[in-house]
Picture 1 (cartoon, rainbow over the protein chains, first blue to last red):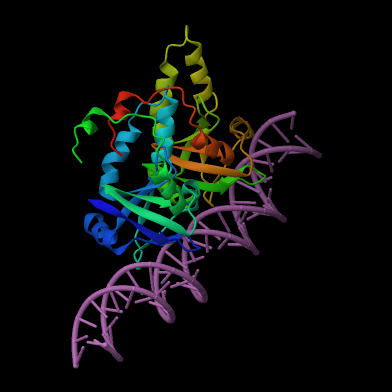
Picture 2 (tube, rainbow over the protein chains, first blue to last red):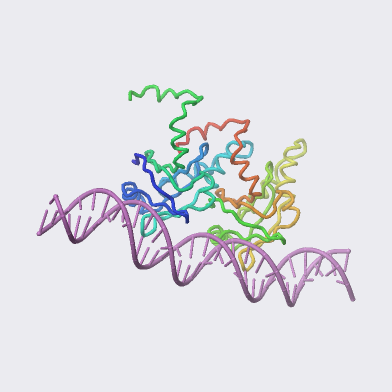
Length: 148
Length: 148
DNA sequence: CAGAATTGGTGGGTTAAAGTGGTTTTTTGT
DNA sequence: ACAAAAAACCACTTTAACCCACCAATTCTG
């Protein structure tokens, strides 16, 4: 169960060091083998332990897509950007240029734990998405039962 | 299971190098023998390992088409553009001009893995299709159950 | 409390591999 | 037989993987 947000920096080569707290857990969960991909709606990256991904990916692939442009888009986002990566000796990963571009990443990033996955954001975009109150949709019934 | 997006360049002769990550898997799956064809709705190319294509093509061909213009269009796109190709010694393929024209390919391309197949896009068109939120249709119920 | 040691994070250089561009030879089609 | 296109070959540039070194911060220890 990942949680918390961490500010980190990406160097000129596109390498970023996973914060040690998260790293320890990633190594425990999956030996440091992860899959990084694009979020289906927002300009951020998703990080899954390999085992998580192996249950999610086939479900996404199996969606019927012949007559649904939005399913195809979902598949392009999730499958079409997914790259398996492994932590190097220094606990870093090298993000491919396509993923850097997708999420608009430059030097300053946020890595956030969200339960079974992580998210990687451009620091400014992360701040903006926390700022923004303009969500158009309502919370679903299950959420209304929560007592926070 | 193919995944990930890779930016590559096509040279003036229409040659393009399949990214090594994907290439290794293609060689493992089908010895580098592939079939490239046109997408039925979008201006991109589809790449199947030969074995995949041999199960898909007969199904498309067998669709009743007497009274359905859309089936005939589907068949023209998928069957009518399909070309068998083989990776050369440098891991490249030579795309016929008709397919280049169909997908509006020039120098900068994206090759994306989408499960059992690949897609080849003009780089600008790929970016636009990721950007575009104007999907008219809703996600199907199966997709709504996903917990990404 | 001061100094030493360790850990986490960062940056750079080297080597091997991948990607790209061009030239020549062979084939194909007219 | 000739022209055009594709295949094969070769050479160069760029990138990624690996290694090592450094700095900062925190912790441990005398």
